[in-house]
Length: 123
View 1: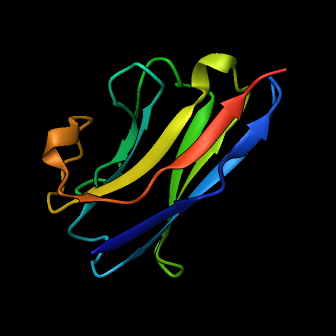
View 2: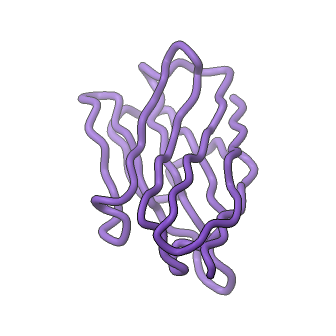
């Protein structure tokens, strides 16, 4: 199983970014996928996750309404579209996958992780 996150960068408050996570070695039908982030001095936190059992997507309260997780099976890629970014969204973002069908925001549940991509929101 391989995951590679990309798309990070620097944006001004109110701006947008879309992160991509290229995946290989597993089938989306059997693996839940998720995005996590870790800001300096803080613990890693769940941002969004997708259950393959029913296609439900979950979001942390802090990003609900601003972030959207999507999946393109043909391209083996998971996306995180981020809008109305604030400085509090600055962090290293990671994508993760786990062999279970009901997604969770608990990082210890995921055994497969990609390298992070840095997102910086500042004026």
